[in-house]
Image (cartoon, rainbow, N blue to C red; front, side, top):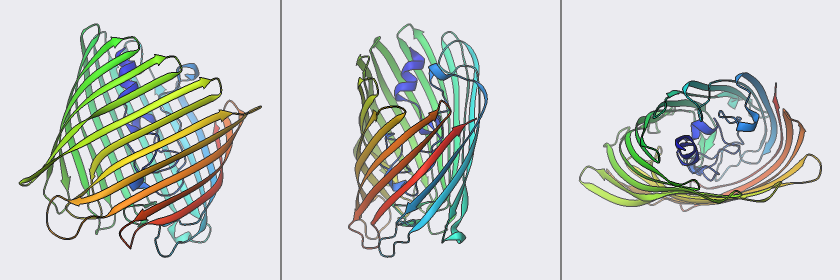
Length: 405
């Protein structure tokens, strides 16, 4: 029960996959956001394999894609189009079971991705993503470490240009089951973003967390989580936050699942403070075999890398449907919208930037074999900003081939 609850509502983005299919702020996972929007990003397979497809040991794979991008730098005034080619070999290793049984387990994966532009060859680069999950589980206790890093160079919606950066994440979590249906958790972690451009502001978040989880029934798990954190932002005062949220993971029927976390965050900077709501939610429905739908929403606050002493508040919604067609064909359609508003929490100067970003992405996938598939995709997105130097229109169309050796 503990493993199911943790996996359903608590797994970090690094523990799911190293890069989303589309590196957007509007994505199926509420952890990501369109503020990181950029190039079409090659997906990594889940590190924790589906129970019906466990392999274990060493796994090798590769993803190759080619896409036309109408605005590779997300420019508001001078869009630059190009053909973008990506080649991403993947190596992954799994030993032990992170969900069931007792004993140690380890899961790791690494992918370097070559990004090549047909015209803008001076912007060619190699992105990197890696993650590690390791731990030990006994009868009533579990110790887990999750960590990962990304080295990326795609353009982001916040900067409106290519942004070379390193992103790190580390967390240690201890879980204890004092009673059959009750779990206590204690965690400590750090997230950090470092930018190559000296005009951008590095930041880090160090946090501690205490959670009480209760298995109300086989179909319903409840939780109460308290987190205290400190944000360190370059050239700005520290920001201290306290966050209290409630969680529910509910599966009323086999084909319906709902995960919801909501509460409030108290943020203090110098003598100023504010209280803001926070929320993550996702609902999934499989009405029949071969058809699945999801909808997710989120609301949060984060520090700005572009404006000194500012944070941005984000509200987003995304939805998608997948339909298996005849033979080995599957059609997918995803879309999302998000609003981001910037406000000053320290220093002086203008603020008030507001972005509204939406995207639509249809795709058609063909399953060649159990270990390979090919997909055709098209994606259109737009950022409408009240800041004249930002905002963009973008269209992408391409093909992607995925193979597991």
